[in-house]
Image 1 (cartoon, helix red, strand yellow):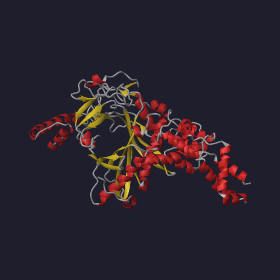
Image 2 (image 1 turned 45 degrees about the horizontal axis):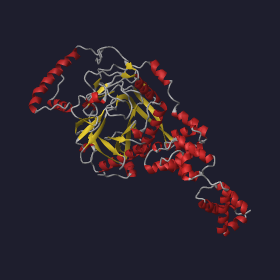
Image 3 (image 1 turned 90 degrees about the vertical axis):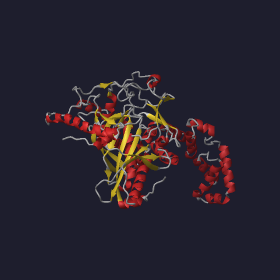
Image 4 (image 1 turned 180 degrees about the horizontal axis):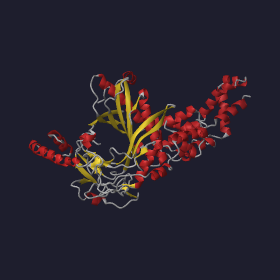
Length: 99
Length: 497
């Protein structure tokens, strides 16, 4: 029986940068468990001979040639940015660390 | 703050190091990994971007065929198996230099896996096992503004340029290298240097460490001597020269031993290498792979290279580096020791290129391994990044060969080259370095030296020609080195015959 604990939901929320308070966690964690159980019922139908599907269409090797195509101008690229400075996107102070 | 360190020999008395290297190679394709934006450095910020590499909603990536070819060729050159079928995966994390909030990478299905590279270290060969080489994309570039130091943790805000986001990267990961002992730092350096030579020979990247085309992360752990388990590792990033790779391994070995020696444990974390001070500092705690919530990239179909394609690419591989070294050693007439020193100094490719410019092999070896290696060492850079080209070295040697300068004066020509004073010919003219061929001036200097050293002159008259050195030295000094020492010797012996 798949189960997702309240702690796991809290951890996932942190990873996804979703701010959940205790009441929300209490409310959502059991719901996610139910969803997970429902999805897991598929495994009762799929036999070992059915591999998990990641792509709906059976295509491979879709490539493009290494040829430059025009993109956006800096003005277009920055047009949706809430903040900018000197042609760059301005973002809040970074607390974490580069990967 | 500098960490406590244990003396290197004491580390080895107690612990066995295990070493792992992750090298990112930035490919030199014309366009990015998943879109048609130019994959070139520099330029106006955010001028080489499109909806795909900016991660705008609805944009669809398409794989660059040339990048896949380069990945396969790298894999083959590293003796890897090439996947018959593999997928891209999303690596999910938040960082502003990555606009999609995931990096498109490969997870448990790398395009190349289970290879090896034989690395020449100090005359022997160490086989480094390659776990995998996979395809992924580079991130944007952040500029951190404000804060007390301007460093990342003190920054008030950051400015991001996405021109680099999406440039194809190949990440090459070794298996843990165990049993290296005292040679661990040297093996790490030799591996990265040889890998660079291979990448250059394949022509798939500019492969300049100082430009960030080739970036090494150094994984290191210590285990009690004789134990076969692996200790907790740290991953040191930003190691951007061969020399730093060696220093970073040595430093982390000494630091780990100091931490373990106090009974504390090593924190599994990333660390940052500081080129200027030669130390590492703590980065972030390393996330579990689970935290990245990898899943197959739904927007990209699997890559299934046909065996025909792989064989065709195998046919494009350059000469095996080991075979090539053997061949060139014979061509150049180098002894084993000379060859070993050349490879060890990271000068093999430079000597090859210098010889190709018409320089005699021994002269090319001499300049790179003595004069230029010394200068690189003094400046703390890799010899390839010194700023003197193989063509320039060949030109300097040509001036020696035609008698314009001698070896001593040639060194001053290198000074001029490093100072950016122009071509070797221009430097000789501007600095007045050409050898004095005025026989009258030379003769006068010889006569003066004989007059000033009557005892020496008498010895030579008595047949002790070995004593001539003192007079030649005096003449050379008088001529400020700008004379042909062989001609001076002839003149001295003629006069005292």
